[in-house]
Amino acid sequence: MQSVWKSKGEKIHTRNITVTTYNYDGQRIIVEGFLKDDRFQDSHVITGETFPGGVIHHMGIRLLVNCSSLLIEEVDVDLLSVPRNECRETINCLAPVKGLTITRGFTAKVKKLAGGKNGCTHLVELLLAMAPAAVQGFAAHQSQKTPTSDPAQAKMIYHFLLNTCRAWREDGPLAESFKKMIDRKKT
Image 1 (cartoon, rainbow, N blue to C red):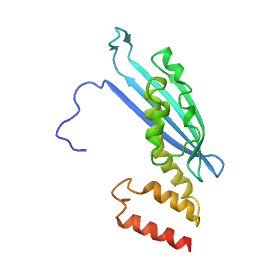
Image 2 (cartoon, rainbow, N blue to C red):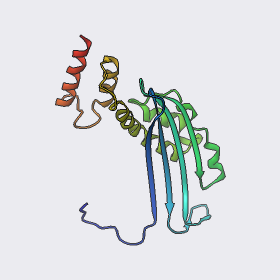
Image 3 (tube, rainbow, N blue to C red):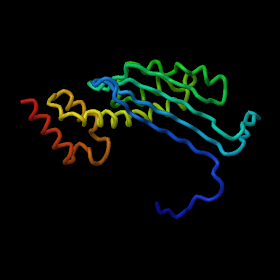
């Protein structure tokens, strides 16, 4: 990476988010994500408290996702390290996400259901990072099989990908080609 500015000085913070997808039973996948914040010095916060350097946040989320619809069937949360006891009160804040489908509008729904004063911004951020990774995991899971001849599933995939980036723009060649393939499968 070339940049006009270079990282200088001592490292003060890192945030790592990892997402891994596992086969569960052929029809469902497990999507597992972890968020970890490390501070490399003592932190003096606005409340007057001092937190020692080290792990500030370390949390995990596991989703059981149905591959026929990208429906979240189960949600499990681990709060491995949090800065305050009050943070542990949010352990169930993602429970309302169970039953949601990972599709357009997912981000707004998650923020409404689990964000703000009743939730945890870090868990919401992790879940929102996991959603596109879940789609990639779903794609990896599906790519192990011969491409589906199910037009309904192909249409679901098409609508999920449409206008998500330049390559999948509605008026682009890739979207047009995929749409024609779906139309051929209908007949």
